[in-house]
Image 1 (cartoon, one colour):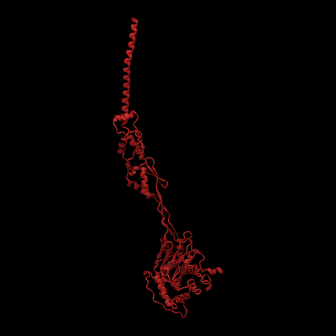
Image 2: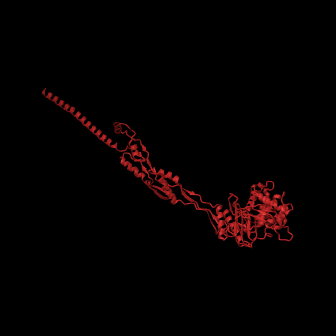
Amino acid sequence: MSSLSGLGTKRRSRSGRSVILLPLLSGVFLIAALGLFVAELLRFSQQQTRLPSDITVAGIGVGGLLPGEAVARWESLYAQPITLYYDGSPILLDPSSVGFRTNNDVMLAAARSADNTGRAFWIRFYNHLTRQETVGGLDIDLTADYQQSLLRDFLTDISVRYDEQASSAAYDVETLTVSGGGAGQQLNVNQALAMVEDALFDPVNRTIDLPIGNTTAFNADIATLRELIVEYLESQDFLYDGQTTVASVYILDLQTGDEVNILGDVAYSAASLQKVSILIEYFREIAFAPSQEEAWLMANSLLCSNNSSSNLLTQIIGDSNLFAGLRQINETLQYLGASNTYLTAPFDLGIEGQELGSIGAPATQPNPNFDTAPDLFNRTSAEDMGLLFTHLYDCDTYGSGLITAYPDSFTQNECRQMLELMSANNLERLLQAGIPPGVRISHKNGWIFDTVGDAGIVYSPNGRHYIISVMLWEETEFQDFERLWPLLEGISRASWNYFNPEAPLTERRDNLPFTAQECEGNYLPPDMESVNLNDIDAWKQNQ
């Protein structure tokens, strides 16, 4: 009995120790859990001074950094220089030089509140313990500013330093050629301003190819041709506006309407240039196509400058009255606008028994500042002669010109015949000597002892046709073919080179005759029946 009782007592003692250990173990675990809780709480509390994880500010990852560390990081990146390439050459821009600065306080405040909770501390702590505190990749926008005026000044300085200005058109008096200027390049400051601003606010893309555009070259215009002509004359010791020398030049670009007008309203002795006026009035008077005899008279008058043929045409115009014909010619000249041109007496033939005399001259208003001692009975100006050829060209080409002035008196074919006739005026000097051989030119020339003139239409192969009328006067008592003629030819060559830059005449043509080539036997049809006003050189095909 006693032994059994002892065994029973031992069992109760072992069970009692188990009951004591369980609370102890529970206490230990509870203390451990509390310790972990406190440790996690301390760690969480410390993390609240850092920026939320998984956050970027101004495009820069700063999650988990202390505020000072975050500011240092984005400031260092945004302080990096921007490289601007001007036509491949690098130029560095320090952001601070244009007043760039980040607004750190604003961005830090936004970052601190970016944990998207806005909830009580213990709720945020619970989310932390359960790993639910995420910011969701939130990015805080950059808040910064700079001084745009400083950036504009910086870019403007680049433009001033590196831009290349387009060069002006130029000319060469030696070769009488005109050349266009070269194109330049220029920084587009306004466009560059926007591009640099984008780079200032981008921590990664800090390189820019500056926008540079080509500037248009200063192409040679007709004003350049005028300057060339004036300087050319001066280089030859011929003042265009001198007291003993005067030059008048009228050039019309038939493609653009641009013109050169150098003292175009000065009065000169017209000499045989006036025969263009007679030709125009003759066609205005005739009701039918010219007869072969009339065509022969025209060819002798316009090609050989035959004075007797010219007087006879004038007499026919006046219905057998020479002076009535002169009046009609002058009335037509005034009506067409050639207000400084008139013919008041027949051409002097220098033969016994010629009927001489004159009619009253119409009122004119030539330039009063220059006196070339013009013929009292036969006058014109470079501008007026250019006008007459303009009327002829417009009539032939567009059905206007003379047709507009006299709708019932001219046809396009008649104007074409007049120009066709004058295209055979192949004297090989004056205007013709300033263009390449074989180029079509319809023109009329005239000269006396102190004056030389030539006017007509040059038909450039490239389509840039032009009217040119040149009058030169020098106080002298004899006609110097080695003085005035080469000057007129130089003006013609400069004009040709301007309108035909692809085929310039850089030197004076060789093998020119001393004076004009003789008309008879060269370019006057051999007889009356050979004159074809629709193809003035047709007779040559039969030779």
